[in-house]
Length: 607
Ligand code: ADP
Image 1: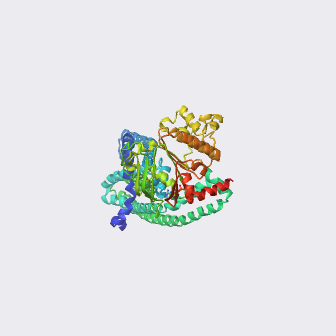
Image 2 (image 1 turned 60 degrees about the vertical axis):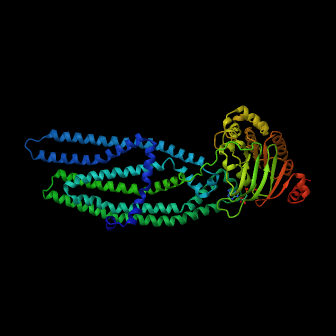
Image 3 (image 1 turned 120 degrees about the vertical axis):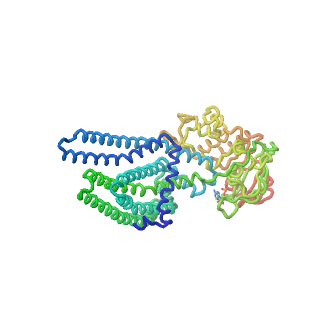
């Protein structure tokens, strides 16, 4: 009791921390639908006050009956009228509760959609680096998972609390007539439990937040064990039991903490609950004795007892609302962390450079991935002018893809400069820049859309343009197998949707290449090993075609096949992030360095 009446600030702060997100949840609801929020608020008020009104009418009825019993000319009409009144109020309570549940259902749908759209809109403004940051990615996934449920749940709990608080206040007003001390008992007896519940709810919030990496690992294990893309290896490498054991171990560790908190929370809950029950019953006894002494009427006694009983119910309901709040808070803190992620301001707005025919120039470019200690690229300089092709050669992890990511501004260099048409990429309008570039990465998107849309995705303006699909597919050598499929370009791809077809790796790559050919306006074409799964013949045919289509364009290709690489106007050999050789196929062979070595190695394999 002492704790509740004279809590130190730290405790109070911690206990009330559980309401920090209530305000934000309310804001969210308010901005989602004002009419529904107002309805919810009004109905909450009505549903909060009416129980006290019922108790008050109850008093009048009992007193009316007692008076009538002691009177020679009983006024039955008056009492019956009161009963009608009470039934009307009871109907109002039922109506307001229905109204509450209708507004909640409607709000749930609107709010779910709103939060999902907020999450996705934010996702569109994020950088690639954000998605590669495990913690941030975790926030995104969690935010999405419960978006349709949590915000409203918090609002419902908050409104539920408010409703109970209103009921308690109205009981207090009626009880005040009996004795101000009764009010103190009603409120005071519930407070310790309330604060304890709020405090434990806050503790649970902190505990769960802090352990999110473990939970994340558990979720990941679930995915690997139970999802289509993991199944093949899990079965063949017999990883199943081992992964499941890890899953169990994590649970055991977390369970120990859970158990401690749950036991502590419920023991305190029980003890403090005893305190309230004791106080309530003491008040009960007090009221009964006062009635027996003839100080209050029988009707008043009935009312006060109802008030105390309902008061206790209201306190209990508030406690359970508070005890569930931490889960909603967990969700909202995560959501707001995610939404609050800083997005770098868009710097440039240039739509063209001062030297339109100049092409690309890398000037002493260096780059380290966020958090990495070593540079993925170091002091890289080269030029590429329109009409020329460039091939990047190097072992895995040497930095080829990184170079492409810098060129496409998925990342910005940490040192040096990249210029296009004589203007630093930073000064270019990102949209204008990306319009000029067509890239197909090794891990290109395999969309579970129709074949046609998969190709059309290369130029979103023409995503539905069947004529352009066909032209692009022809150039990307995908047309023959697409036309052989029963539904042609309308064939659904992937397994998620009914009737979806799966393609072979090489067929997918042809789709991806066709997608690159949709970007007819792009003058920088980049192929980052999208042909690795194709047979050598198809690859050679594609690159021949590719070159014949790319007059006046700049092409950059990454391939491990020297038969492809050798035809490029210039070849750059990268090793551990640095350029170690560059030149034409012939000059590099003559140099007899790394390139010549690798070329001979591969040539020997084909002999
Ligand atoms: P390549 O395309 O030549 O095979 P990459 O450019 O993908 O090589 O990788 C170059 C180096 O950068 C490697 O050491 C790799 O580990 C590192 N790296 C690649 N992607 C990331 C990333 N998203 N975050 C941190 N390091 C990365």
